[in-house]
Image (cartoon, rainbow, N blue to C red; front, side, top):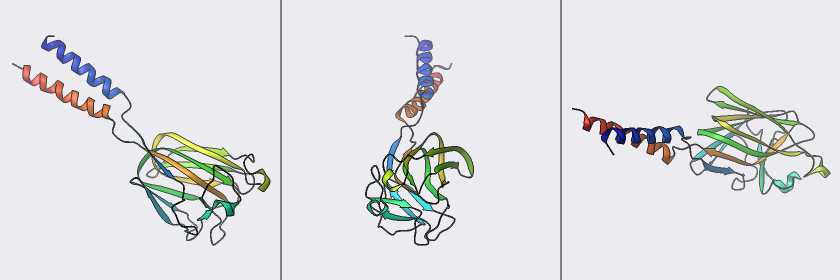
Length: 205
């Protein structure tokens, strides 16, 4: 292979590697089972280096960690959940969740006190990047009149979300996030670009 074709080959590999999505996600799950019941907002929880801070404009005490069994909720709610039936009985208040670094995916289970929707607004710093609305159904807990559902956001990079509901109160559980990380392919592409530059310098008259 001539020097010219070697340079073209290396450059092509570099472009290919850099063209592939440069993120490999690690999964973090916040299910509140390791948080003491009665813990109220504002508080933080750290899983594998990702810290989520839960708060509300109606703090202190707008949301609290409670036992699912005392909330009359069914699976997939298990152990503890976070709900806005806190010690002050706050209603129709938002839940703010901020992260110490960017995430690119969020999933959680929710339940509402009676019929109502849950709205998720995602922000990158102070810029709104996405909005998702989901409605619960009574299929899991129709006997108690607490519709349950799930909400999911994938795609944009964000570092905080705001949850609001048209129901007076809501609860969340099993919050799952993914954290974007540099992939091996990105590092490979960077190395190949450097190699192509080295070949060019070596063959320069």
